[in-house]
Length: 465
Ligand code: AMP
Ligand code: MG
Image (tube, rainbow, N blue to C red; front, side, top):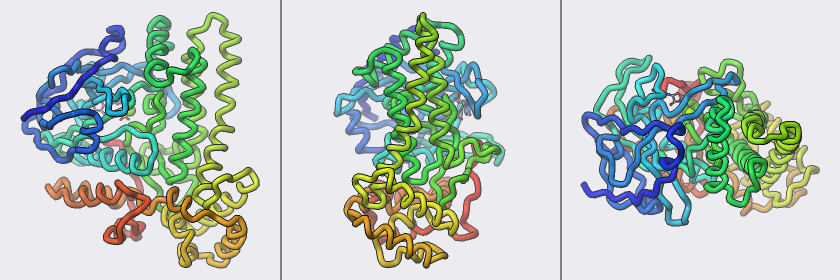
């Protein structure tokens, strides 16, 4: 099959200690399950070939490598992680002049696999495909999904033998907070400097040195996490190795969109303490940026001054998060210029929603309709709130642009995976069709907007990826 990828690789020119060069591991029988034609066009990719996106054939111009990084996992530092089941094929410059990574995930073992098999099964591959593309449809920065390929090989997990698959992930880069941490922690200051210069040139060319980079990443992460909050998204594993320098959402593992609103909502089966609960995410974003600051401080001779400067930058983040939250939730209520005076109005609605177990997405989407109070059990309380709100003369068009009608609900994802395992890709196609335009969904997708019934509720998402 003919395939042309216009590679222009930069990471492979960085020092050897940044990665291990190796090819993906070939698979038995590559079958294309999903291909993102629009994204391929944006990337300048011509043609396709399942054997390339399964890792069985290395395409012309690729310089395959596994990246090295470390990271804090649930608050404890792990001195070495790295791509244990991913291979960066290389980079392209897209139609908008932006450099983008092309990475295979589930492409076989690497020197960083530790006890893992380097593989992924179909479920998490399709979950990441759907949820990352839904995130893009919502207008929130995210890695993208280019391809999902079945490998024809089994993968063994707790549930038993499962069909293997490889995801092709596209990212502004795969630089993580953990990429900085590994060199800082090992005292490889020259490497840390090379990495910092590379990150600035690639993502924030206007940034002035390491402190400029820190400010820019803090701003990007504050925007990102506020955007998640505005659509009820719970990342699930906000470890520093899953926190990008670019400000894109990355690593969709045990993630989920909330159905009923609750600040304490947790889905991840491994998050026993609720560290990454919905309402904790802004605080964790600040914690992650403090880890990036700690790494970048190593670049300075005058440590006292560096600590002071970095602390000021990280301490400014809660205010940025608050401003972004107010702007986004204000817009969801139709208020283009929400001020701190509007905060009680927003918070009171969220409190009502939480008390009533109201559906996050559907309540916001219904606000501008006559039937909004049907979303609440305490209708009188909602009606009283709505009277206060009406006095602020909401802009209905703004609400339609900021309140999605559809999100990838967990029970729909589980059903989609179950069907795909049985070779039925129709639920996948249907979800993808509906989620591409989440602010304007046709009535033929009404069933996908419905919250789960008692028996459909998926209580937890598993890390057994
Ligand atoms: P994640 O929780 O997906 O962000 O992964 C954390 C670390 O575990 C990363 O270094 C991954 O590369 C590694 N990892 C996860 N699953 C596997 C696997 N099946 N085989 C090898 N490494 C893995
Ligand atoms: Mg990860």
